[in-house]
Amino acid sequence: MDGVVFVAVKTTGIYCRPVCPAKTPLARNVAFYRSAAAAEQAGFRPCLRCRPETAPFCPAWKGTRTTVERALALIEAGELDRSSVDRLAERLGVGTRHLTRLFARHLDASPLQMALSLRVQRAKRLLDASDLPIAAVAERSGFSSVRRMSTAFTQLYGRPPSAFRKRSSERRLAAG
Image 1: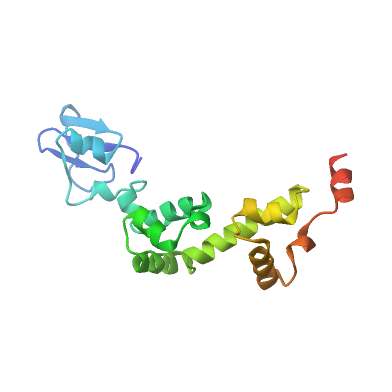
Image 2 (image 1 turned 180 degrees about the vertical axis):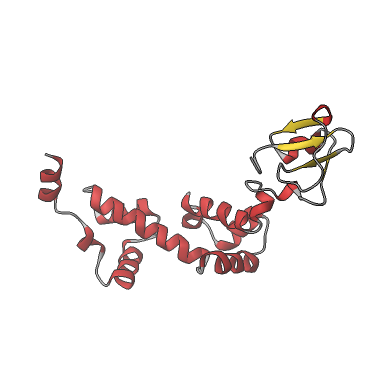
């Protein structure tokens, strides 16, 4: 229940987590809220002992990981295919250097490395599951050109993207 429900004590004006070590209040003096924000909106302040605003499942509990998760969602949606790391950082409300440091701390990779990895994964899926021309695969995967996609595959796997294409006869046998 920790992080799922918040207990507000009407007589003190404080809200807590269910695991708070403070003395248990009388049932008639308690109200329950589904979020820390809801308790605060109702006029309660957070307990200084259990710090409910940082309870599990609250964004504050995750700290800087929340920023990285938001950045990853934008990268997966193609943000770095269309724009720069500077623009991504701006959308997140942080500086470019800070965003790069967060990625290094949480993922041991830069935002650009993550974007490239996601592009290669998308391209591999398309090569395997479709008969699209290599140029179309590169475009749909977020690469700016076939040459860039080929370079990425060669650096990562030591072979070109065409080596990952399932043969159409193999695909027909698997489907049939």
